[in-house]
Amino acid sequence: MFNIEQIKNKIKLGLPLIPTEVTLLYTYLTSQLEEHKKQITELEKKYDELTTNRRGSSSLFRKDV
Image (cartoon, rainbow, N blue to C red; front, side, top):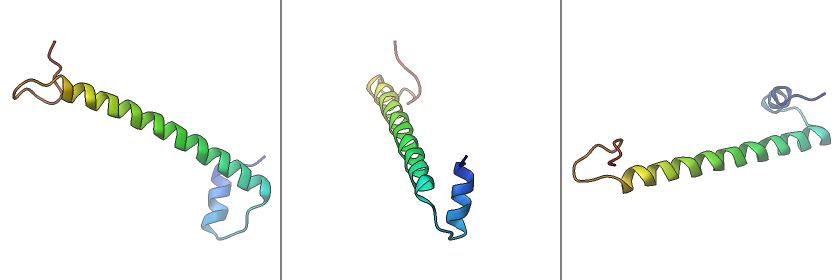
């Protein structure tokens, strides 16, 4: 069984990867990318909510009701 940490270590050491490791690394990185995209979207929504609901000199983090 392959493990991402082992693959990372092989890359750091400059060792070649076998095709199964390349596939696993690709799958791992793709899933990480999707997760980060979701997090960015959530943060953008929160930012939009905070900046849209601001009034006058109110704090950026205070939502006016």
